[in-house]
Every structure is written in C-alpha cells, then in structure tokens.
Length: 105
Image (tube, rainbow, N blue to C red):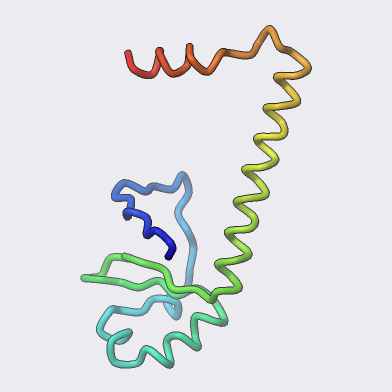
C-alpha cells in the first residue's frame, strides 16, 4: 500500500496561478454534485474554495500524471547537470559530510 504524504502547510508560489471564475468550486457544490464536478475537472483544473479561499485543486489523472512526469524530468535534468559539473570541475565539489555538518550548525 502506498504511504500517504503529510500535507505541507507553508507551500508558496513565486508567481500567482491564474485561473477563471468558472474554475472556482466551493466545497458545498462538491458535496452535492461530485459527479458533475469530476467531469468538469477532466477538461481543466478546478480550484476548490473553503470560506472563499482556494484550498485544493481537482484535476484529471492525465493532467496529474503529465505534471508529475514533467517534475521528474526536470529533477533528473538538474541531477544530470550537477553530475556533469562535478565531473568537469571536481575542485568545486563539496563533500556531502561537510554539507551535513554545516547544516547542523
């Protein structure tokens, strides 16, 4: 069974996400019309509001999978770049134990 992740409380974005009013759905509507809301989310992400504040996002599995794969790809690109840099310029590399020690201070 997959382990559930703990929700992060202080998730912030450098730039606001833009969306239309037609993408806002309050929690009461979700409770009453989940089947309809689920179909709408297959077309574009829906932003679920609670007390007027965006609380969650509902999107299709395909959109989630695409987003997840893109993040994985970007993370791999960063790792590949760092490995190339460490190989090309070993003198600029930092030992992981040094990093660990400095993070504890």
